[in-house]
Image 1 (tube, rainbow, N blue to C red):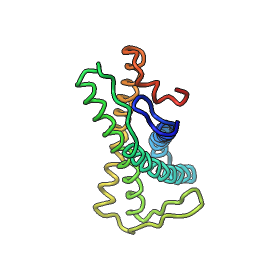
Image 2 (cartoon, helix red, strand yellow; image 1 turned 135 degrees about the vertical axis):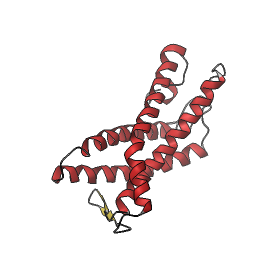
Image 3 (cartoon, rainbow, N blue to C red; image 1 turned 180 degrees about the vertical axis):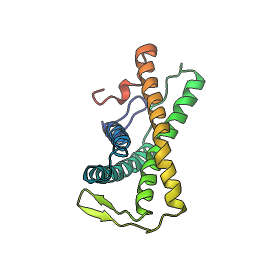
Image 4 (spheres, helix red, strand yellow; image 1 turned 135 degrees about the horizontal axis):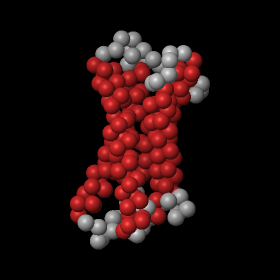
Length: 180
């Protein structure tokens, strides 16, 4: 089924979830690795790849937000404690917010400091400023420190899914699994 139902996510939501999750986890790892490299060819190769893939993530996440707003979202188990329902909602909002803010901050950090974004050699998003200003500075701070917040919230999300699967033995994880 393409669309979500009241009990499960459809193939589009599942594909977006797992594709974006894999890309974000990869980008976080590559991002943390590439900043430690000495200036040179490898470092700039990883930066170009990171920026292009971050742009892909932004487009996918914007479509994911649209899809979520225009489709039914499966409900939480009725016997789930209220505090867990609130935590689940806020965690999802935080994840969706970070999935938008993170690539936007990376793009702005690059474009507002005179660095164009090469999209896999297909086209280039031109730089918007030559000298760093306030937007570049705020973007830099967000893109530098948000990875640790993002990793923490992703970890919480994964642990909650595993808790539901192994301890509560409900359908929360299964309804998002690609083969479920």
